[in-house]
Each structure stands twice: as structure tokens, then as C-alpha cells.
Length: 630
Image 1 (cartoon, rainbow, N blue to C red):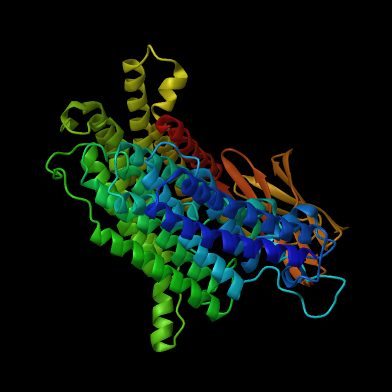
Image 2 (image 1 turned 120 degrees about the horizontal axis):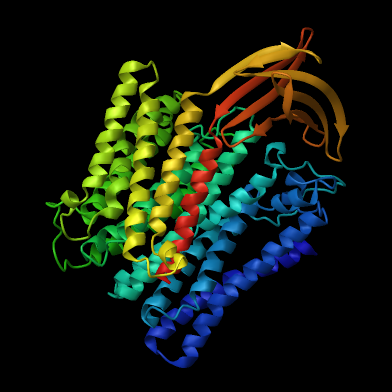
């Protein structure tokens, strides 16, 4: 019953999309009110039909309808309710349905937009539904979420245990809202080209959606990183995993896009670059989807599926990207005025940072697909890991971060760097103290560079905010803050760099074999293995270790790492125990039991909390800036 209903809504969605494309053609033949209403109604029905289909699949998970293959393979009756819900998108078929749902949500919301011209608005909806049609056909032909299960069974296989986590329950939807949302950014950009209507209102709409998608994508990456930090038991938060890179690449392109949109009024030639970046953002999202779902990558959280699905997504990538680039070349916007890079002003600094972000993006892309190219040509599997990315990406980003600190203080047109002597004094002072520390100590040079760079960004941001506060002190604090949202994000970058530097350079690792009652000395603390207990939960059995963290005779923390055995999937997982503090994390992983005792691994991660705090500032600055441009 649920399966039939879900199929019905999917085919109704397909029908409404085809009708929408037909009404778009009729609209340009006879632009009257009736055709407009039909066109908008069919566009909005797309969303409603796919929403009902999604709710059908969700209901099938909630009631454990194992007559549906998707539910059978990814759920069981004893799974907690929240993971029954997240199981809907914790697999290939359900996640494609979520992808289409998010595309139609953006189309639905955009259909009420009254800011841009009707011609551009309708063209945007047309391009968006054209892309949605491709994904609906992909779902129906290769990834049907309502496919019937063979035979009858009373119990399912369950969701992958490492995906049964609150952070990962919200991580995929946030990622999808981010990089699937770039499809609408692409549609708006292409519609502006085809209708020759890239006016100020078009810029504002494109800017709002670009900033929103990039901010939510940042939140998705944050939740994924935090999940990896405490769930995988590796003691880190970023591993240059190919699937992580798949979300990082559109993030970098989006970062270049939202900065380019800040200067588009000052030089209309930048419109070419903005439109190209709009195409690049969604193209990289599609490429990342291909890498994740084609089965050609080995990753902790990749959808390793058959090659036919990967081939279909690759075909969609080439069609959408090729069609967009073809329109871009045919309808290339005319130059209104040339760009001047002679003076060092805000315009120049953003252009330089754009170039740097694109180079970083290409470096990440090369490191991600290079092993695939080598394997396909020479039939040899190689891996490109952290050493490559750290040695290429970090040095390239360094000058961009230096410029970022002073860019908000620069004028859009004038070469006013010589008037900002306070920034130069701060910069020279930081360099002097960094050199002094380097000469007089044995501290890692990268630690000095990282902390010095972070201090430079934070102080420069604070100086600029203070200067603007004095200039607009008659305004309310709320207005001052919302007028300087970029400074909030830049301040977050400084905090983030401190967290990354400290947790990477000064991280300490301890490993030993302990029995209950034993003590391990770590850093300035002692760690006592206080207790070990077993706990039975509905869908797994856990062994929980209790560790007391002491400094001298004072106990100031209790940590409980776990090992879990999931009954349905017969998989053992490790759950790290973490004592969170602002200045440090004490991170404990309990390993295997052997005759000598339990293998214990402990990480002392200084200032790692600043990573999460810094990213929250970045997201807040991005989302607040939407109100500024509203």
C-alpha cells in the first residue's frame, strides 16, 4: 500500500514537471495570465508530489514496512525512532529522493519571488525543473526507493551503525540544502544570461541564495567534522577523505562566488566571473555526487553503488555543465568597463583571493581524482593523503588569509592602503615577535605561522570594527553588527585557525594496556581506569569503560568510552569518550581486550573547541548578511 502510494506520487511529480515544461513553452507563445497561473501551479505541485512521496518513504521506515527493499536493507524494528527517520536518507535511494525534494523546495520558494522580472523568474524555474527532471528519471530508472523486497521477512538488516548518531542524522540534509541549493544559483545565473537581465535586483537575489547555500553547506561540513571527531575514534576532525573533499570543493567555489558578488556593482565585468562561478559550484556538487555514488572511491561514508548509477550521474554532470557553459559562451555578457588591478584596493584583494580559492579548489580536485585516473590507466591503486593536501593547500591559502585580514578596511576604488598605517604596524609587530619566538625557541615554525596569522586576522578585524563603530556610533548596535557581518565571519576564521594550529601541532597521543584500577599519566593529568560495565540496549550491546581524570588528588572529569556490538548488522563500533573543555579535550578510545588488559588510546587535543566556535562565527556572519541584503 505504502509502496504503491509512493510510486503514484513520484509519477505524478514526473507528470507535473513535464506539464511545467510544456506550459513554459506555451507561456512564451502566448504570455497571458492563464498560462502564467498554470506554469506556477505545476511548478509548485512538483514540490507537493515529491514531498508526499518522501513522507510515504518516511512512514514506511517508521512502521518498519519490510516489503520495501530500501527499508529492509537499511532499518529494523528495534532501531531508535530518530534513526528510523535518518535512515530515510542514510542510503543511496532515499538520499536521491531527498536531493529531488530539496531541489523542488528551492523551486517552490523561488516561485513566490517578486523581486526579479517575470521573464527571468520563469526562465529560472524552467532551468531548475529541467535539471530536476534528469534526477527524477535517474531515480525511477536506477534508484527506485519504493522497489519491492523479494519474498517476505519480519526483520530488516538495519542502518550502518556508524551512521546511527545524532550529528549524522542532520549532517546529510544540511549538506544537501547547501550544495543542492547551488542548482538554483546556477538556474538564476543562466536565466539572467538568456534573458539579458543581469540588473541590480538579479544580483541581490543571486547574492541571497548564494550566501544561504554556502552558509548551510558550511554548517553541514561542521556537523560532519564533529561527527568524525567523536564517532570514528581517530582523534581528528578532518582527514582529507575523498567524500570530505567532495563537499569542500563546492564550498571553496561558493566562497569565491559570495566574495565576487560583493564587488559586482563596482565593475560589471565581474559578472562573467560570477556566472562562471555559479556554474562551477553546482558542477562540483554533481562531480562530488558522482565520486561518492559511483563506487570508484573507498571511503568511510561513501555510497558504494554499481557503475551504471555512477555512469548516469556522470552523464547528468556533462549535460548540465556542458549546456550551462555553452549558454555562457553564446550569451557572454558585454563589458561595461574594464578592470583595473593597478591599485591595491578591495576590488583587487577580492580578485586575488578568488584566484587563490580556485587554485586551492583545483588542487583538492587533482588530489581527489588523480588516484582514479592512475587506476583507470595503469590498473594500479594508489592513495593521495594528508601530506599532499597539507603541503599544497596550506601554502597556497596563506597569502589569501593575509589579504583577508585587511581587505574590509580597503576602499572599493581608491588605493588607500597608505592611510591604514595601524594595520601595517600590527603586521610588522606580529612578524617581529614571530621571528623572535622562532629564534629563541624550538616551537614548530608552522605553529608560529598559524598563531601569528590568526592574531593578525583577529586584531585587524577588531580594529576595523572599532573604526566602523566610531563612524556609525549614532546607529543602534544591532544595525552596526548587521552592517559588518563580513567582519564576524573573518573573526571566526581567526578563531578557527588558532584551533586548527593548536590541535594539529601540539596534539599528544598516549597508548597503553590497562586493567581496571590502573593509572596512565597523560600531559599534566593522571587517568584512572575506574570501572567497566556491560549495557544492553534494544539494538546493540555495549561495553563501557569509566575513566577518572585527575590533577593531583582532585578529580575534575569522568569519561566513558564504549565498544558496541550491533545485533542486526553484527558490527562492532568504537565510541570515543571525550572530556570537553574550552582550552582542551581529553579524548579516550577503548580498544580490544587481550590477556594483558584493555588497549587504551588517549589524545590530548588543545584548543580543539575553537574549531567549532570559529565555524559557528563564520556561519552566523553568513546568515546575518542575508538580512543585510534583503
